[in-house]
Image (cartoon, rainbow, N blue to C red; front, side, top):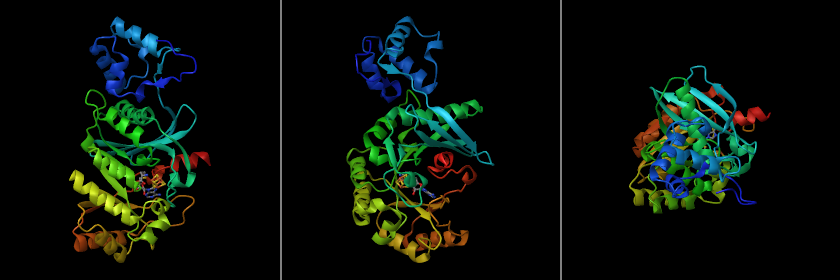
Length: 358
Ligand code: SAH
Ligand code: SF4
């Protein structure tokens, strides 16, 4: 069907499989499956060059995805990229159709790869140490723009002769639960077994603590892992780093995490960016252990990545080890120190875009 006047064209990557199949309902279902596999599994960028499609599918693509068709084939353009000196981290700056740029990071570990994707251009939450927070909110990403980042990472891996994008973390630019519906649609597309097929148990959503979103994840029984960024264990300490905690207090957030844990039976990951002299003492660790008492938790300790508008510095190694010991001995909590791999490619969220704009 040709495009109606004033009707915006839609990215074919915004569609879930059922939505695509419904658009193609005049054709045998096999054609929707072939197109889906081509788009998502093969990550094909030029459909017009495919000569292996059967005639009805070729015709559908010509009518619906041609220059006056309802859908277009979206490809995120590579604006810049960099690689860490150990070659384990690759960072992409991708340009969206309106010129905005977002970051996607590909990390390798033991031959397994994790993609870290953005969910918004900029972020409204304003965490003081975060380069994305420092630039402010620009706009939400559509599902297709989130899916497109995974496909870009997948193509980059394949181009260097590697397969196996295994895990996905929503820890790039933006706050995923502030863009709930688009993020859930994107995750449904990314975890679809006929396509990209990153299973829900290999997907982690990281949130600054958007309480209504956490409760909605629990109510809807979404099968993904949840990581909650804390950074402070008292209202005052947290508010100094995370302005969003004035909207959803620490008390409300922890109550929501308890509800989430009870409703889903799932362990929660808590993230704590360690800043020397600010939140890295044994007293802070003891407060954190007390706060999380009774919640099945794993704590990820993240060394601070320096950013231009925050004067704090990363904790010393000895403080980090001591922090871990207190968490373990006073609360029985396991913790992991996030590797600082990639610091030389400005792998902290939002940093590559911030540098590029300067
Ligand atoms: N908005 C979500 C997800 C994106 S940020 C959230 O805040 O959870 C992903 C993680 O990176 C968060 O835990 C965040 O606190 C952390 N982070 C952001 N900037 C950082 C920096 N400069 N150094 C270390 N960690 C940082
Ligand atoms: Fe936004 Fe997360 Fe950065 Fe905070 S840390 S400003 S929530 S992207």
